[in-house]
Image (cartoon, rainbow over all chains, first blue to last red; front, side, top):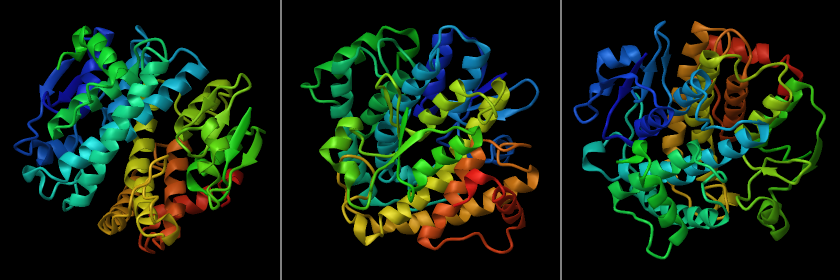
Length: 209
Length: 209
C-alpha cells in the first residue's frame, strides 16, 4: 500500500490520525499542493479528482476519498474500532462524523478557499477552476461560530463527539477545529466542554498537529 | 421503528429507495416541509437539526442522517447488499457515493436553495437562517454540468456508478440527476451512457419518482 499525503493539509490529516490510532505503518509519499503537484499529469493519472489523500492498494486500486480510505483500514485492521461495533453505534458515529464534516470542516474550507490569494480560481477542490465568492466566506465564518457552540453543547452531553469513546467523529471534529485556526477562528474561552475535550485529545499521539 | 419522511423531498428519497430495494416495510410519517413543520417545536424535539429523514428506533434512538440510516438498515437487513461485501468494495462504493453527493446532489441544492423565492432565508438546511447567495447558484449550475459529463464518462467504464452492480452510489446519483430537474437542468441527449443507465434504473420499483 502507498499513502499519498500532504502533511500540511487538513483532509489527509483525518487519515493520518486514523492510521496512528490503528498503529499502522504505511509507506507515505508527500504531494506538494503549494506547487500544484496535485494538478500535474502524473498525479491526475493516479487521481482524476486531483485531491489528496489517496491510498493505492497493492493490486493498483486507488481509493480517492478520506472516508473511503478509513472504511478500508477499519475493515482490514479492526482494532481499535473507530467507526462502530454494531448497527446502532455505526449509525450514531456516522451521524456525528457527517455532522462535524458538513457543519465544521466544510465552512472552514469555504472561508479559506474563497479568500486566500493563492486560491484565486481554486474555490473548490478538484479538476475544475471556480472563482471565489466573498459572501460564501462570510457565511462560512458565521457557520463556524454555530459549529463551535453546538460542538460545545454536544460535549456537555457526552465525553466524546459520538458518545463515550474516541471515534472517527472526534477525528473529523478535531481536524475541523484546528483547520479553523487557518482562517483565524478559534472557540471562545467560554466553551469549556470543547476546551476540555480538545485538551484530552491532545494527549493522543496521532492528534499532535 | 418509525421513518420520518417528506415524499416530495430528495434527501429522504435516498432512504425510500434504499428501503424499497431491501423490501422493508417501515411505518412512515410525512413531515410537511412546505409549511415548515420541520422547524416546529415538536419536530425540533425529535431532531434539533430540523431535517428529514429521521429514523426513530424502537428504543427511542433517533438517526438523523440519510447515510447513517442506510448504514443501520444495511446492518440489520443485509440482503441485498447495497454498500459492499468486503473492504475494497466497501471503499469503492463509499468513494462513488460521496462523489455523487458532493458533485451532484450538493450543487443542485446550492442552485435551488439560493434561488427559490420560498427559501429566501433558508439557503442552508438546519436550524439557522442564512441569506441566499446568487453567485453560489450560478456556480452550482456549472458544477451540475460537470457532474453530468463525468457521470456519463464513468458509466462508459462500468454499468453502474460503483462497478458492475446496483449500489447506494447509484441511489445517490439518480436522486441527484432527478433533483436537478427541479432547477431545470437535465443531461444532454449526447450523454448516452447516462441515459442508458437512467433507463435501466427506471425499471426498479423503488426508483419510480
